[in-house]
Length: 393
Ligand code: SAH
Image 1 (tube, rainbow, N blue to C red):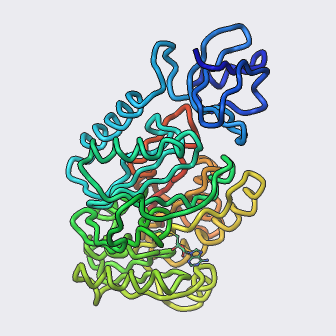
Image 2: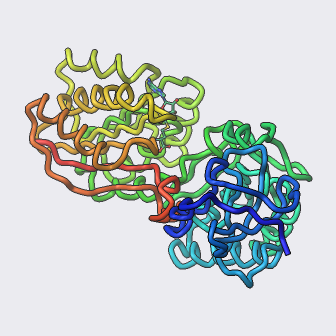
């Protein structure tokens, strides 16, 4: 018998919809004294079992549900089944990929746990105390199920503070090189697992990097704005672009981008330039330079709903400027990675930019995060990356 968390009257609706979080404000009472990270049972006010999961008194997300089955224990065996299922799912979707996300937290029924594979190394992130306390067990299970030994912890996620956790990063145990070459769609990229953005590489864009093969016109001129270490640039060159221009505000990532282009044999066709995309697009408008394809993959302009309007005006500005720099029939590939910008809002922003630029858009493809970052429809937080590829006339 686990301690019980009893929800307030009428507060079980989200649980019935399948969302795995129970917020502090939804709880009416507690029986027993669960320690933080311990397993609790959740019940509706009327006494119906809702689910079983990890408790944390220090978090607004008071319980993270792991099972809705009353006869299923939340123990090592459950974690093993979930991990095995996550790996099996990847095996079916990406049978040959060697660098990809293996566990997408709530998207794989493992709240707060992210596991990325970069060739022979696993990079783990725990955003929730329940998982953090079981890190050694999870590492043991992952080693057993994947056969991989090297584990790096990127617990430098600021959301950890919401769960009362400290930020840190480092080796789980034995050290190994953390700057490694990885394979993506037959191309090679250098990834800095310890110091790179996220866990080192934008794995969530993997499917979209590949989508460039159907979008880049042979011999065309491509602008990759917010290029990071050049994943889109190198794919554009591999897809047949004649000239690729990558742009980022960080000079450190551009050095890696240039090396990535060279290591794949596209050093001559790719050039990278440091600068603020907002300023550079404005300056380019005054020149006669036009592009056949422009990629806009900016960082999230908002991490809260309050800043949404300002974020949308930032997105609109770069989209408007990019639209004006495309040849008729050119393609704009544009993204938002902000959870708060819903797809319909994103698409209407792009359309508003097109109206202002007096251009007509035809949809080529709707894009989202790679399938190894599964979206659960009942959990909007599992989906954040939205993109659009449009022909511009
Ligand atoms: N497209 C990349 C990921 C881009 S991440 C990929 O698929 O790998 C966003 C990038 O935007 C980061 O590298 C960051 O350094 C850069 N950035 C943020 N603000 C910027 C700005 N105002 N101008 C130029 N680059 C910017």
